[in-house]
Amino acid sequence: MRRTYFLAAAAVAAITFVSCRTPPQASTSTNDSAAFLKEANDTLLRLGIEAQQTGWVAQTFITQETEAIDARASGAYLTASTDLAKRAAKLPTASLPADQQRQIAVLKNTLTMAAPEDAKEAAELAQLVSEMRGMYGRAKSCPPGQSADACLDVEGVTKVLAESRDPKRAREVWEGWHAAAEPMKAKYSRFVELSNKGAKTLGYADTGVMWRSRYDMPPEAFAAEFERLWTQLRPLYQSLHAYVRMKLHAKYGDAVPATGPIPAHLLGNIWAQDWSNVFDLVKPPGASGGIPLDAILKQRKASAVDMARYAEGFFVSLGMPKLPQTFWERSLLVKPRDRDVVCHANAWDIDYVSDVRIKMCVDQTAEDFATLHHEMGHDYYMLAYNTLPVVLRDGANDGFHEAIGDTIALSVTPEYLVKVGLLDKAPDASGDIPLLLQRALEKLAFLPFGFVVDQWRWKVFSGDVTPEAYNSAWWDLRLRYQGIAPPSPRDGAEFFDPGAKYHIPDNTPYARYFLAAVLQQQFHRALAKAAGCTTPLHRCSIYGSAEAGKRLQAALAMGASRPWPDVLEALTGQREMDASAMAEYYAPLKAWLDEQNKGVAVGW
Image 1 (tube, one colour):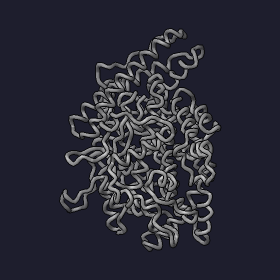
Image 2 (spheres, helix red, strand yellow):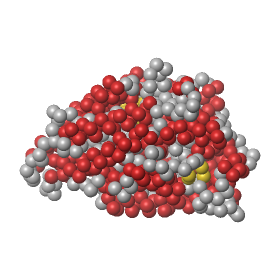
Image 3 (tube, rainbow, N blue to C red):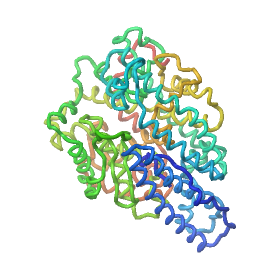
Image 4 (cartoon, rainbow, N blue to C red):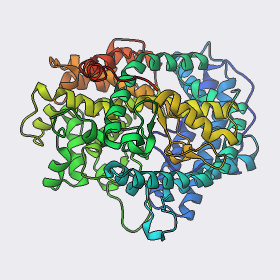
């Protein structure tokens, strides 16, 4: 099915000549199921390539025309995949061979959006998503009363919030960016209505239930697993939150209260999901600014391609092949000066075989250096499973795809930077707390945000949250789980702050990112052990380990051909997701944070 973690393509629109046919009579014939699966794989490959091609163009040449072309191609794919999922759901599978059972199970459970039966409504659904993606790509933060020249795109807003220490300026650009999402609200409400209609045609109560049904367990069991993992991780997050709040209060005074939630605009990130940009404000006394990789990359005049070559070299060191030449010829790594593009980083698989790419507006920063390693992890995953049936050319679950990239990024350690010649010497153990804190501001700070995005959507899809309460429900959840609050009241029905996050208009499920946060640490611990690493986990890099590469490649090549616990076991020896690896990774930091927080209120 369509892999939205690397295809954020413009919108899907059903086209009238691809009909939602009536499911055939149930049959237990292996030959009949084999014929159906051949049709499904052939259809998804043909229409998927068309959708990938037009999606790429729509995101790298944003115009009304490219959005329309992409909508038609994506719509054909959506309608056909919805049809195939409906037919797969009607097939009895008990007597079929295991490989056919797996393909049918995956086929009926991996849609992110199902088309309604009515062709006009299906076309409308596709057009809505296309329009919302385009609105996001063109969004600007515009100061009140100033000319259009003062408006900032997402890159500009990101830079201001990362670097400015002026609360007034930060609030201005934050509110401007979120205001740009308000026109999406009516479209999103209609999208929810139509998307739910499509989900019901597949037998799901709503789109949220459909999403939660893809994890080789009942949807209610997945929701419980989600909550279980967060409960394990909450104490770790709360320690970090209390420490950061204390430090920001010292910097900003009453603009950041000593108790209660932290204002979202003062955490260095548009969505307050990554706090690494405030490291300079919260670092331990006497600590350096961490590894000065930004300065090193700039000093060496490392181009976007140079940075991507380092990422490729990491995978080659594990025994994997170099990327196809087409990757270097066709990827978009530098923001064009002559047109709007969607700069949000993602990896693409255009032909489902070897035409893998990255779309990203690369800057000379440590963040983008790590992101290139992450996105290339997606590409190598795609290349590893490219001989499986098309239906199974996907991650074991969507969290796996994100976790693989993040696992590689965890190996971007000082020791790795020394090995590739970007650093002369790794800091000694006295620098471990600053290094862990820097990583925690990125990874731990993200956890509750990764939890909230789909919690909100599940409530919206189920009808528990209605359009007039979209924004209040969004901030209620962010307060409850993140301990974050907006810089000004945002309860009005006109606001639509969720739309300021790319994955909402893009309709990309977000639970995968939370799962990836847990799985990446589990993967990292297992691969570090395979690599024979004897240092603490946060210092381990699997760079250059053929044994770790062999284990990783074997798991990647399984794609979605087996339930995710089987793939997890092949990679880690465990069959359940386990947050203890994350606790082990951050154990030195947790002890240090608790010492710093003595006498300070924890929680909000």
